[in-house]
Image 1 (tube, rainbow, N blue to C red):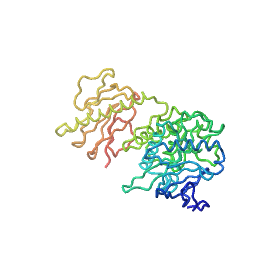
Image 2 (cartoon, rainbow, N blue to C red):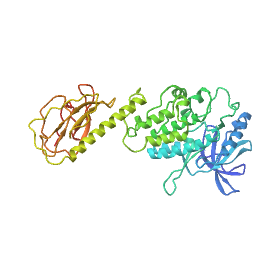
Image 3 (cartoon, rainbow, N blue to C red):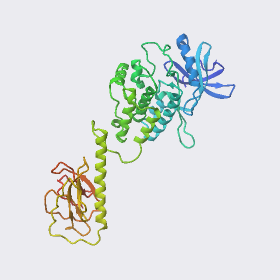
Image 4 (tube, one colour):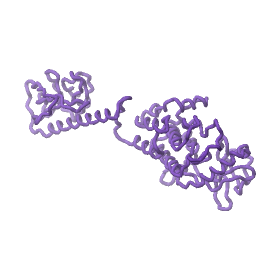
Length: 435
C-alpha cells in the first residue's frame, strides 16, 4: 500500500489503515469501522472538490442515489457525507482486485472468464437502469473482482457511481462544455454533450468487453483528442485481429455495442451479455456473408445449402441400403437431362439432382450416375458435364465430403470427394482417393 499522511487518522469515525487505490479525484483507503467491527473501503474526494459548492451538492445527491441500489453485483454503500471538510463514501471492502489490474496482470482473458465478468456487470447496470439511473463511467477500474470462492468462481462488483444521475434529472450540476466519463470508454453522445441514457452505458460496456478479450481499450493513443475522435468517427476494432482463435461473431457483437448511434446498439446491457454468450457458444461457425447481402438473401442461401446437404444424405443412404456387390461396367452410361421447370415424379435408385443454390429449383437430373467400375463396395457419385473415362480407385474410402465447383450454367453442383482429396480439377468426375 502507498504511504499517506492520513494513515492512522480518523474520518467520520473510520480509522484509516492504508491506501487501496488512487484516482484523479479521490483516494480509496482501507479503514476500520470500530462500531460494527468490520473493514470498509473509504473513498475520500480531493479537498479542492469539496470547496466547490456545486460539486458538493451533486456529490451528496448522487451518493444517496447510489446507496439506494441493492444488487449482488453492486458494491453496497454504508454511508456518505461530509466530515472534517472532506467528502467521503464508506463502502463494502472487497478482497480482490479491480478488472483493470487483473487484465494488466493476466493479459487478455479467456472467453468464458470474460463472459462471466461482463454478464455480472451487465446485470448490475440493468438494475440501475431499472431505477432510472445511469452510471456514465463504466470501465475496468470501476469493476472489482473478488477473490475466487471455494468453487473457483469470481464475483464481480460494479462500483464508483460518482457520476451517476437520474435520466430525468436536469443537468445544471454539470458544467457546460464538459462531459463526464473516461475518454477510453466514453460514448459519442457524451463527447458531443447530447442526451445521455442507458445506451451510453451499453457503449462503455462494449469497450470493456473489447479490453477483456484483447488486453487493451478499443482506441489507444497518447493524444486524448485522437481517442475522442476515434469514438466519434472510427469503426470499432475487430477482436479477432488480436484473437484470431475467437469466432468472427464476436466482432459483430462489439461493433453493435459500440455503434455510433444509440438506437443502433443493444437495447440493454443484458441483451449485449446474451449476444456475447451466443457468439462464444461452442459449435460450427456459420459463414460470414459479404457486406451488403440482405437478410433475405442470406436466408435463401442457407435454405439452398441445407437442401443440397439433405439431397446428398438421401443419395448416400440409398447407396448404403443397396445390397449385393455391383459388377464392373464396361463404360458409364451418359446422364440424362431433365427439365429445370418440373420436378420428376419418380427417380431410379442412384439418381442425382442438381439444384440452383439461389432458388432451390431442380436444374438437372442424372440417372445411373453411380459408377461401379471400381473395386467392389467403392461406388463413385458424380454429375458429369460430358462423358469421360472413369478412373479406378486403389481402395474404398471410409467416408465422403462435399466439394462445390462450377458448372456450364454457373451453378455449383454437388460433387462427392474423398476427404483426403483436395484436387482442383473440374467436377466432371470424382477424385480417386489417395493412398
